[in-house]
Length: 145
Image (tube, rainbow, N blue to C red):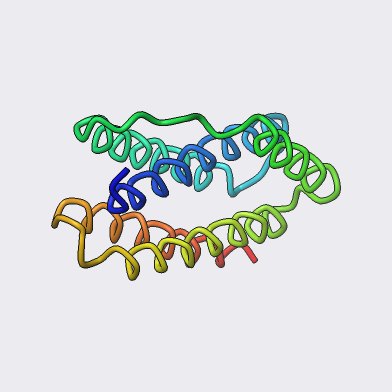
């Protein structure tokens, strides 16, 4: 596989895991009265959009995708459940999301730096858009700390 597809694969996998974890988080917060919920729902919508865009880009290139493994999803689900049961305050939820987004943001910066010479303008744009989404979301979530 051409290494330039790695950026789209990274975006797809990060967005896929983001969708899964945010859906789980919202399920755990369903009966709770958190002010952060609308922000989390907006994050979910954006992750879904990036997942779709990356998938379409890869399908156009004939690249097939594998779904994230069950163990990764189970581990994330258990962590979210434990955190929400321990402390479901908006501050704790924001902190948890910021940690995940920060790791994803650093990874995306590395990917863009590594593959910038081989990317098309479209590929570079989606990568930069995804990075901006992560960084902007981190700043928005800081209001809840």
